[in-house]
Length: 116
Image (cartoon, rainbow, N blue to C red; front, top):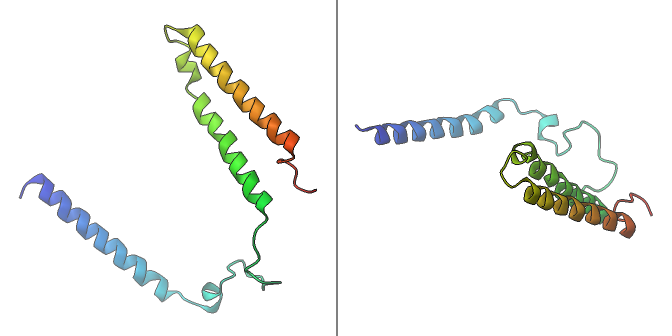
């Protein structure tokens, strides 16, 4: 057997074993608390089908958008050593101004307020 066939067989066997374990282990340790839909242990006070506030999703999306800023700004120390530093500084400045403008816009529109 060549290497590719051996790797494929080992991958398939590992996949099969892990799938069987995944279905086998939870059936061994089932009890009423684990089978209930409320895993925190508290009895439900109301309907579980109440919709979330739209403001919650808006705040989550805003957080994700502004959190991406960190991932885009992390390589800056390495970019500072490039041959064209003024151009790199201009692009980073434009990016930060755009993010600041977005933050100010959300703030003035009341998107960051939790209560009315």
